[in-house]
Image (cartoon, rainbow, N blue to C red; front, top):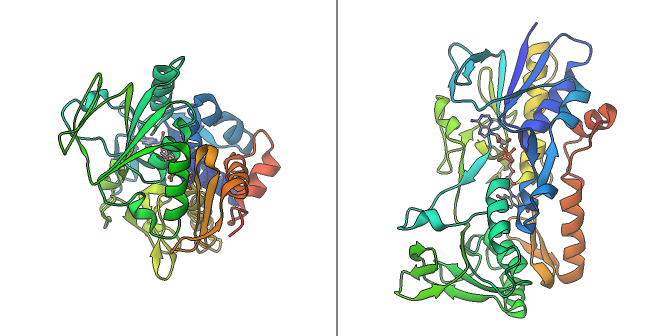
Length: 371
Ligand SMILES: Cc1cc2nc3c(=O)[nH]c(=O)nc-3n(C[C@H](O)[C@H](O)[C@H](O)COP(=O)(O)OP(=O)(O)OC[C@H]3O[C@@H](n4cnc5c(N)ncnc54)[C@H](O)[C@@H]3O)c2cc1C
């Protein structure tokens, strides 16, 4: 009997498990997924501040397809002995898929303990708890990337929002394409934007900025910077500046180790690496899980062939902006953009309970979203 072991229960891990189970067929291949929580978390839904809406019970995806869920956090990986350490015990593997995701890089400013975040269900529950019943609150959101913009525009429906950006433009990493739409939305919603400043310190009652300005607020939310899981450092292979492992087009790091999702720097096309997003994590998981199992069973491996790159940024009551291509050409805005965003937030939910449907979806490389 051989073992495919998947570390992580997010988009990449769950779809790796489903794809490996699909390839397994009637063979005696064992597929095991290790992750500490009983739920998969749909992180693109986190900015809505509704923790229950983000959780998917792993049991209802994995059990029907015969995947074993080991509830534990991996603390070490020994690629020579082919074992992962769970603290109190270890598990062996024949093929490993590392899919342990990413996390927000914590701020290192005085008073950082007072910062809120929406990086996890726990973070969202803490923020939602603080804002519960507070009408007319003031929120400072630090960072105007995807997460900061989605949160700022969401909160603007309920209170005063001040968006802090170190660069001299909003959404510096999003490029000039969608910027006029984003700026118009922020103005429409009354979000106050402070450019060219960052945070000097944080306290119970607000924030001091790098230019000496002070803002009194109910919450200060940090959204800037993502980093791959530190487990990537346990694999002796090249990593990029985000800590992601370099993988080939089959998502293999080397030999019996594959990586998928936010821990993997795969090529999306000949000129671009994937960005950390569920639109790439999902098809990467499917390809990596397929390949890990197929490699053991002597079946053909598949290339990672993602859909063309798109983005859909929620802008709260101002709609959403949908872009295509690496230059992010604007295709939809306002109500039309919002309808597509709502559609995406639904389709990222995996099928539950129905083995045939879960395995069918595991065989689809395309996310089925317009590009
Ligand atoms: C607020 C927010 C909004 C986002 N919005 C969008 C969006 O609109 N569109 C989009 O495409 N992307 C979006 N993303 C990014 C997207 O959510 C991630 O790219 C995606 O979740 C990556 O999937 P993953 O499976 O690689 O990792 P994750 O979803 O991070 O899952 C990692 C899994 O690994 C587990 N794990 C971690 N450490 C260990 C360990 N030591 N041992 C065992 N298991 C471990 C975790 O518990 C988790 O189950 C957003 C992210 C955030 C935070």
